[in-house]
Length: 328
Length: 286
Image (cartoon, rainbow over all chains, first blue to last red):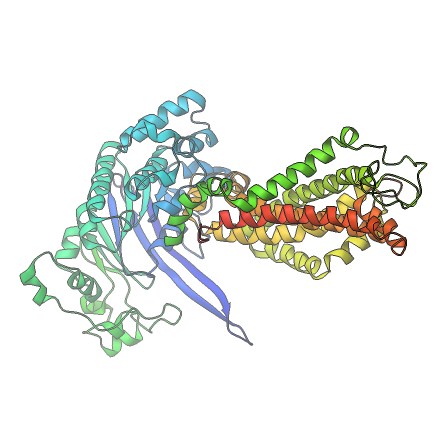
């Protein structure tokens, strides 16, 4: 990890606004990503954990400028991604790519695999014709697919193979950074392990950085050096993945950890289930968003939103329990 | 998401499914005969369609004149064969024009959304609120009755339907991750719209096109019947019905034969269109 981060996300915010209701429509806004700041070093994997709807995927899409942001900044190697001109953005896109959750939807069903993988190279003038085909063969080999895949269509492959193709396409331009949006959640457990091993191998071989989005703590622990926990659009805790999952500071991280299945029959009794579902992001709770589900909530939690404070070097948490200094 | 999984395999087999469909086979045979008739009219038609015979006017069908003679003593069978040329040409060209223009506009509306979509959809809704025939009439009346203007008028009446279809299909396609993947890979909007969205909605547009072809041919005949078609003496199906209509009491067969020609064409095209629609619908029983 060098000192200058490869990716620096600074107070990134995304608000979805819709008009709902009849006969008098009301403007409803959802802060899907609420002032999120994260950094990622070269060759590092940062896990983003949270329940569905907490803004994990939106964060990735805004950082990639697939969705327009509503505030904050994203810097890749110090360069402002959100302010880049269309031409410059095209060049920046070469360096950051995305792998999607559903590999069936991520590939154009009417395009042969060879064409899918060669197209980005042609568009960016990296290679064309026979040279592109040679590179595509190498990519297929790298992700563990036979060269015969070239002339086939996505529907001829299994889910795991399609995910390999999706990964190969993300690698086609030789990126430094990959946003992996739940890349193994749609796959069988046995296939998950293969894909994770492939990603870990690619990460080491190509010195790739990953923003790895998942709701599966086991996957995060296996793949990521650091992790960030999101709740209703906000980051509530960050830190080294092992430490964060072994000794959670934030009550929500603790809840996530305790509600993950443990592969030990004796431990099942110890599993405590927490009451309640995540509140509606349209009308989030006041103060700390987590207070309605938190066993330690106080009046202060209901009134004031805690900010993310570094407790020990490398570990930050947004919780009043751990930052008494902010009680003023 | 789960529906998307099944679309891939089902779509590729569309044409395989279509090939064995009896409706499509029957429709294709009918249409093939019509196309051959139209293409080879000069060789198939027994007489010059505009030549006035010496035989009696409004003659009944006979061995020499299979479908009889019209009020000018012209051979009705030859005129119907030549009329197929006009009907098919106008129908095909107008439908293809509408398909291309409507799909392009619809894809743009669906892909960009926002203000562009609101303007395009608003105009489309206004155009759709006119009955198709009224719209065709207005346009021909304004533009003047020539074959080019009739094609243009029919194409314009068909465009809104294609815009709406392409827009809806594009909206559905936009939800698929491969569109975002293309953007993340730095593809231009044009590339995504016409190299990735268009091929994936082509099936639906072709099905719609085969059904609209029937409508376009009917509209052409209707315009000709009203007197706003390709001007006489050119033989058109609608024109022959119009002439026959004037002599309905003397010899009703003159109006019946070209009507039958239109009916057979409609049946053929609709058999193909319905068959294709069933074949492209992954949920349709096979």
